Length: 162
Picture (cartoon, rainbow, N blue to C red):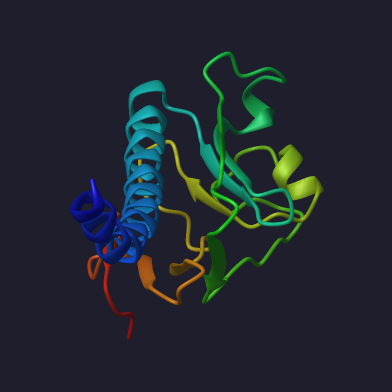
């Protein structure tokens, strides 16, 4: 019994760090999956999609552009782990009153609250006003980046961001 207590006391802190790192990795993968889902849905349904982030409430989600309907029955919301922080890098959000795509300029709830969002156009491409990268970090300082790929057609998880 004493041997078991010694092993647990030695390995406990290492396991805690391991699980904290897994939380960051899991959340980054969930966000990446949500970008793929947004692109796929935009292209398959022919409607613009918005992946919004509310850092104050530690939530994020995916919904159709409200100009295509007030209620999105397929909208998805997630809660961000309380130990994780997400920061927008290279936010290129020119929010003019006219849309560059010729679509109605009705703003989503995220835009009305001035939340950062990644916008996918009806052809599945990423809107030029979308952030280039999201910096995700945990309490221990470990960082992962969700950044646009070099070809700017999708997002990918990176260890560093240039």
